[in-house]
Amino acid sequence: MAAASLTLTIKVKPNARQSVLEQLADGSWVAQLKAAPVEGQANQELIALVARHFGCAKAAVSIRSGATGRMKRVRVETA
Image 1 (cartoon, rainbow, N blue to C red):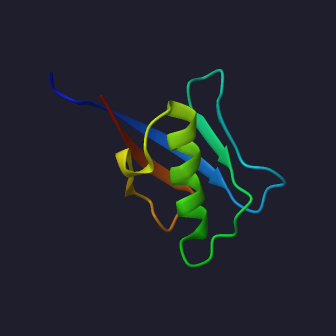
Image 2: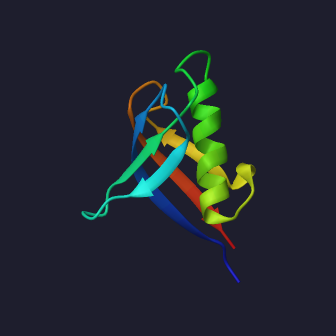
């Protein structure tokens, strides 16, 4: 059985009061992160948040593009 993958485009809002990942009515994703965008902290928090949301390991989540911007393409490997 081959592993499937899912690619999401997520708009990231750092320095939020709490970390939340939500899908909007139009199908787009928004992540509010407590971490500041300093030294990759926000990216690490985003990976952990996506992994928790989809119930997979952090190693199964990777940022494919947009690592330094607010719009990120994130890939999730599912079993």
